Amino acid sequence: MPALSISEVTFCSVCGHTTVARVPSGDNRLRDCCDHCGAVHYINPRPVVGTIPVWGDQVLLCKRAIEPRLGKWTLPAGFMEINETTGDGALRETLEEAGARVKLGPLFSMIDVPHVQQVHIFFRAELLDTHFAIGTESLEVRLFDQREIPWDEIAFRTVSTTLDLYFADRARGEFGVYTRAISAAPADRAVSP
Amino acid sequence: MPALSISEVTFCSVCGHTTVARVPSGDNRLRDCCDHCGAVHYINPRPVVGTIPVWGDQVLLCKRAIEPRLGKWTLPAGFMEINETTGDGALRETLEEAGARVKLGPLFSMIDVPHVQQVHIFFRAELLDTHFAIGTESLEVRLFDQREIPWDEIAFRTVSTTLDLYFADRARGEFGVYTRAISAAPADRAVSP
Image 1 (cartoon, rainbow over the protein chains, first blue to last red):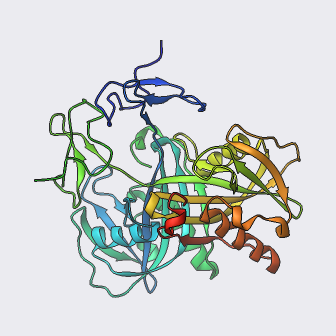
Image 2: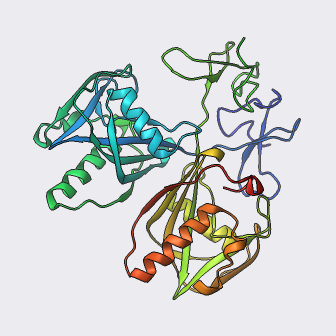
């Protein structure tokens, strides 16, 4: 007997009937299927997009006002919305979380976080001015010199990895594009990508 | 009066009640919300992952056996699944669609396709052997020299863009990483990213 659902999907979003987990014709894995209307409900990883906003030698970080990792520091980033590009989304998140207007630079890091079904994508960016402000999802927004970065208080490993790579590239005077994968978090950081 | 739904979601997948489109507290855009159980149903773009499988000077393409663009040629690629990385997904699609085993290389292109809510991500790859085979989603799988590429019969603009960039980089002897965005298709290619 198949499991009722492979995910939180238990009702069909198209017709409201209950779904059942089975392998659809022509597919090779379990999906939540509606036998009433025929809909198949796929689940895919979600892109998270953000920037590394730089002003001279300093990097802009935001102190999170929301869970997960409330009170920890992050680069401005968030879930990509429909009808926008990765770059659009990174600019939008930078404005929403840090009130910061930037010139978007090249892609810098693309980090898989499979245990939370996310791909984190960061672009380099230059602040256009220092008139940033605290967004509704932030408690504090400020510029950090490299030596001031609160490494033990960074919200997500994708952010600390991206900052590590950024400072290493800045030191050698040449910027690359990096792909990384982050595996399931240790127990004490279980909710943090 | 709000629209009943901003998407195909009209029933709550958690509890089966109808949803309503409104801006949730703390948010700034319309979401499909369930006033019965409180669930908010977000919609995000989906990553499509694939490879540029190379054997010497030749590139492997697949003739699509399924819609959209049935009968057109593509690089092996498909929707990223949960619990895998972008690289894992690219390898899986290459095996499923082309029966091809490759050594995964670096990220090559990340192309936004906002009008279909997708981000296409291609990695360079080297075929380990020429024992590729026709996958269930392909009618034909074969190697092409650059001059043989059927440019007018390429299934998706993300694929032709990626091939263009690939051959240009090969000609200059140095490979980069590229981000691009593709806007809404002309009317005669309305279903094709």
